[in-house]
Image 1 (cartoon, rainbow, N blue to C red):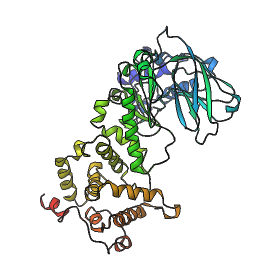
Image 2 (image 1 turned 180 degrees about the horizontal axis):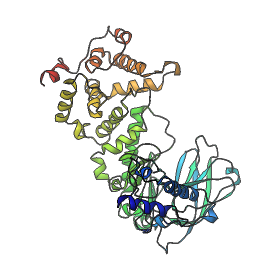
Image 3 (image 1 turned 120 degrees about the vertical axis):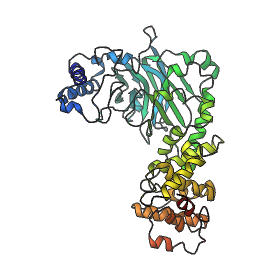
Image 4 (image 1 turned 30 degrees about the vertical axis):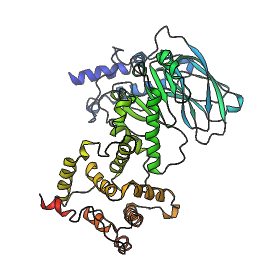
Length: 474
């Protein structure tokens, strides 16, 4: 029965009709698992036909686009009586990436963007949709939305016509190093969406009118972070200004920690019904599932710390020179600890896996097993860095990361062995302590030459008998 259902669904996908499935209110059909049972059932052709159908939608000229039935379900359509509006948006092209417009393109409807002649050829783009994750991967076992639903259009003339079968929030995309200055873009035939811009939007107007704009998706835009979220989650939001100020502090803290002094545009969170990987993932935009929509703008909850949000922002701040082999999911958690302490005023061990009992358990498990590797479990490896924070404070981390930032290219580590050696030597010289025995205790390989170069410094260990206490107690 299961295979039969898959056959029927995939057969429906290959039809000329644009219907996602028979029931357009349920656009999430069962989908073959990661083991690709559609191959065993001989369904590759049907799958390819459906994928091809969606891809064709993504390249249709605007005049040929029609609303896709499943768009009503996600990302959503404005109410039938929502007025179409015209709005002029001022875009500072010194700020790259997506610029929120507070407008929404209805599924299948053409919008137009008009720019001055001087902006033509500046590689600006008109984007419809923020849910840019593609869900075609064979690792995704079931679809909860259509796998591809966003489009963008290069602005190559003074008037650009655009349409998306799925609709979506409207943005002006600015490329890096754009030299156009401030550009006014007139957008027509779109639907007003809730938009709060920190320092620009009047809070009283937001409470009375703006948050009730009819489009199904809203935007909160701060100096350092923007959020794309369902409008339903902002209808009663009274303090978007304070929420954005909090997020600005978080991003500023992570910028500070990573030595970033040249932020050119805000980071962005987008909430989605389904994302391409994990529970959240980093990038631009940072993606999270819809169940986070009631947390991302809840100031009280945010002030209690959100390890996952801070973690994904941390990925956007990591730099390869100081991320040792195997520590991508370890060193990123240093950012979460930093934000807990510096922004939220909370103990940095905000994750249950870092409380005293968990740390003790993980240390005993690791040091009691000589075959274990320090990077195999993220919260075990994090203890290594946390011990350095305990021993030397955050200032040592600031110094070493800025040192890495300012290295000449010829000085940067070229492989994993050099990364470990440089972290050992640089941290030892910054702290004035020989960390060689500490690295050896953790079974982190470094060269004899690196260890020899710091033998003039006094040895440091987090505890006098480290790590013997954790091996003897097993």
